[in-house]
Structure formats: C-alpha cells, structure tokens
Length: 155
Image (cartoon, rainbow, N blue to C red; front, top):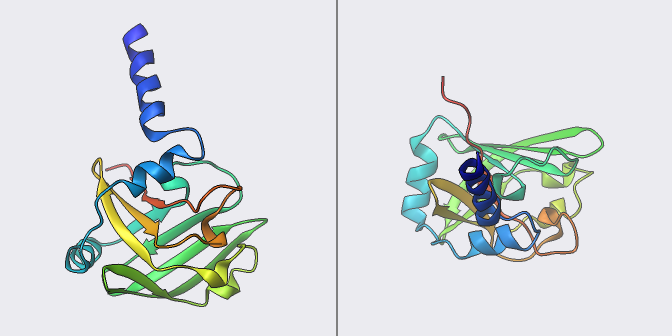
C-alpha cells in the first residue's frame, strides 16, 4: 500500500499540480518538424487535445480540439455552456495553424487571438504548445497552457 501511494505521489510531482509546472514541463519537450507533425496528425482516425496539458480538470474553461486526417478540426469550449466551431488545420513552418471562426467562441477570452501551435512529444503523448503567450489559453494569471493528447480507453 505504501509503495502504491509513493507511485501516485511521484505521478503528481511529474505531471505537476501547480499551475507553473505542467506548461514548463511541456515547454522543455522537443518540437516536431513540420513533416513529422503532419504525418502524426494524418496517420490516425482522429486526435483529441484537451486543455490543461491533457489533465482532466472538470471546470468551465475546458477546451478540446479534435484533429482529423483530412484537415478538419473541431474546437469545443466549455464555459457557461458548450460552444463549438469547425474549421481546417494546416502545418506551416513547423507550426500548426487553424482556420476557423474562433471569434464565434464568445465565452472564450482571447479566442480571436489563437496562436500558431507547435506539436511536441514526450512520455508517449503529444502536446500542442502555443508559440506565444495568449489570453485564449490562460486559465489564471500564469502563462498560456499547452493542450495535451487525450488518451481514450481502448476497447
């Protein structure tokens, strides 16, 4: 029992409960090249990224992006209610750009200031990391949070 508790405690420290830990941890991961990022996004049926570096928080202000291999992207924001927009994604200069009516996400602060994102990989997960600070991905007074790949249970 003690060993199990220590493993859980180590897991919390690695992922970080503090608001500063997870963004800086993801920032230190290697950035994928444009070719590798595009291959990764087109290789699967879909990839879902979740705010808070992929750690479920269950709060309002949760953001989900679903990328499809045909270039479609669906963006969902949970504020007072759930808002969704659809658009396209493309890879350019080692960043992922979104073409979507993000301003229609009226509850998301800074939605119209969505930055290009870098695809990073570490610990068997993918992360979308903002190339600059933005209000669209801030959930308190700290730096913008990355979005982490959501691991769905296998059937």
